[in-house]
Image (cartoon, rainbow, N blue to C red; front, side):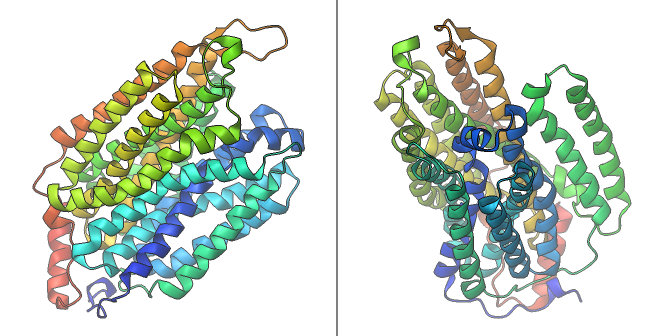
Length: 502
């Protein structure tokens, strides 16, 4: 009998504290992704780096997340979620301290690589919730933890703006903020999160992890650097070609390994496959809103006829923070909708809100009220989507695959964010308006409109995925885990039944 099938200890009663601590940890995860966006220019000036070199400060975290998230997600399923979560948080603390103390671009990038490992915290947190939270509260708990992702992304932008204001901005303060939050999250996990209830054991599929990591890097590297390299350059095309080859190698490896890191049957199982596609679109739309609005409101209206001439701090606090706050509050509503309507319907409702929000933003972004109002609707859409996706993933996989399945879903959102960054950067650079001599080239207003239209189309695809790709009768019943009182035989039967379904 495997460890995963042994009788679990009685379910804890203090699951509210567990949810709050895991929500804090997830918020820290999302902050690592956007923390450096407002300060890349400051880092470039302080370290006397080129634009191409400093872009690796953001890219390094993305690539690190792609490599380590599925590995740590699977490792947590096998060897215990809490010890894996503690280990990842310790790596993030060390990386944040390194980034906060170094004056070397190379070591700063190393610190960012270590921070990127934090992305694995989110799937580990969802795995712990599935074990520890009572079934009737599971959807709401997952929705709250998922909602902290969008909130954390916005909070990071606000924090970076506040900490670097003034005539002598210091980017090191931003990374000290990351250290403080990571230490608080680590302490919370150590003292509040209970020991892992189940472990599957088995060997770690290092070859599968290596080939999957190489595949994801070969996809994300040209997507994130294509604007610098040139989309038709040999490096960009070569990386995409290498991704195709590595994808075939990864499939061959996983089919031959006795205990693969990713069960390929799970990977193509419709609920999981379509949820990952939805995650890709949601990641794209969320980052488009954050990045597009941030750039738009900073455009000098007196010079080119549009924009608001906002500072980085104003862009974050006035225009982006309301979106983040609505995302956090909307997550609770999303959890209620998942319980009452099902995750499929919640995803569809949220995507419809996203279409509405980006339609508004595309047609009317000339007033502060319009930009904030449309952003709040988009924030609601994102929170509903984030509330629904964990329930869809949990419904589609057995409990011992929760970590790796949610890890892959996290990567799909990261890929979507990377694609959004590449698309927006390319669109804004492709068409500029005349400006006085000595002023940097500025994008035409139509390019912002086009970016928002594309993001609205991404949400429309999510509506199609939810209505045509997902089955409505799977979600409410299958998303609830078995209670701790079930005998070992029942747990084993449930796992076998779910595996057979996959």
